[in-house]
Length: 315
Ligand code: ADP
Ligand code: MG
Image 1 (tube, rainbow, N blue to C red):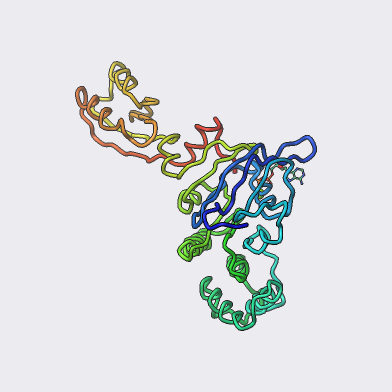
Image 2: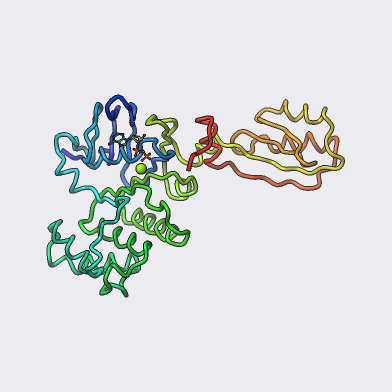
């Protein structure tokens, strides 16, 4: 039975092996109602495999997966009704118009005909394709097709949406548009699971993030907390005169300072997390040199990934 306070997705110890190869390794997390939850990891880290298990396309080797309280192994039909899939492949009918693509899909999903036209109009307007409703999809750009695929996935009013790398290879403008739609769906109370290997995307959209690599969970938290815990603030400071070695040594001893270097005359100080040691660095410096300029780079998820895995995020 599904209860109102069940997590939308609850994954417990999910493992998926292909032969001897472990693609997902004892993964556990849950997604709460109304949140945008991100699975962030490099190519081959097990994101699609995890999504495929959630959507019933693939069976777990071990572990259990619940969607809205239903065990996917026992109740695949209930799970499918709750899910709206926006797969990597858009798979639209190119020879049909935008409107007929949606109408056809509404039929398959058994959307009541009284409801159908109103929903189609509403969704076409959400994805800004109302004025192209009667154009054949074959004439659409890639971005328009993706938007139509998004509208299609919403036709049966699913409670949970998932997007598998929705902006892979999408131009900047369409990417921003898609982010706006995902945020608009959150306003409509939808829960969203999204996979991405774009750090910026995860940062902009997600309420919480699970970072995975080699099928294993490395960290799970809000983007801000992850940046604070694993990120780095970089200060670039020019001084007159350049700081002597003794000054650099003094900076290195400040709590929270991870790294101090001089590059091309500019002092570079890396601070763990979000700039709590910035004040102490500035004070220590100003006792012996004059500060001419300071720039500060906020921590980003790139740093987080580097810190967690010891390697940069692969593209
Ligand atoms: P991601 O979506 O994060 O890029 P995937 O979940 O697609 O990663 O793949 C995770 C790993 O599992 C990869 O090494 C991939 O080659 C492997 N894999 C995925 N599907 C299969 C399959 N059907 N058979 C064998 N190996 C697979
Ligand atoms: Mg994938």
